[in-house]
Image (cartoon, rainbow over all chains, first blue to last red; front, side):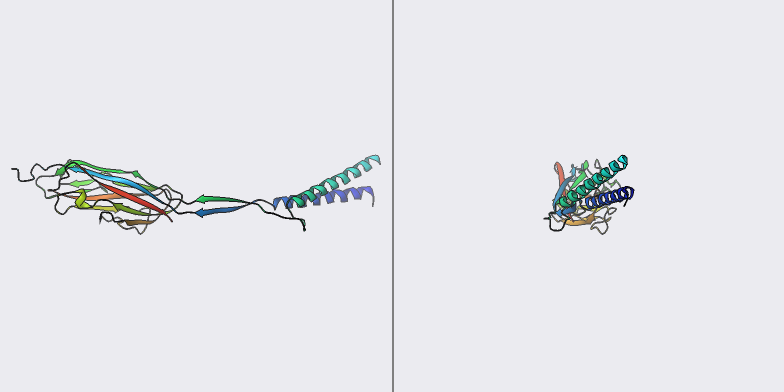
Length: 63
Length: 194
């Protein structure tokens, strides 16, 4: 094999090694699992209904 | 010829470097058979919680009385109408909102019924109505329903996040009712995460 073909072969081998390295790296991601749903809680809010009823002038038969 | 040998030497170096890189990578990620392996996991937990609040927490009808020639006066907060009343006016009702991160069921209760809110009167009425725009199948939906003191009523089984609901009131005030000062009912809304 002449040197020219040997160089091409070596560069091809280098490319293959690089591709394998890339593939292995990309397939080795850290796995993030979905969030666990924990705990169900209650919450409370309050509001007010307010009024004042004053004496009706006619109440009690004042007339 | 010398140049060709230099290129050949560099090619060998490139091959050796990439081979070394491959071996290190395989070693690091435990791909090579026979290597000890381990896995890591990033775990994220988000707690589901219910949060509900009144965005409109006061319904103040003011102060007044039933017209002297009438037996009863009425107020409806859904349309703001009043009848046979002097001084009193319908409020806008109450509004609560699901501001948590989960859909919720909603319960309503009042610490006071009609007789407590409108003391001394003959046959008073204190009723509520819940707008079902954001929640199907609710109790008291779009129909006024008598309030019982302390009774916990499920008014929505599935209120989505950020959604609101209106609570409106109907008051029937007898002419002989008298509160001797301010009278109030505390309305409590409870949201439970689904």
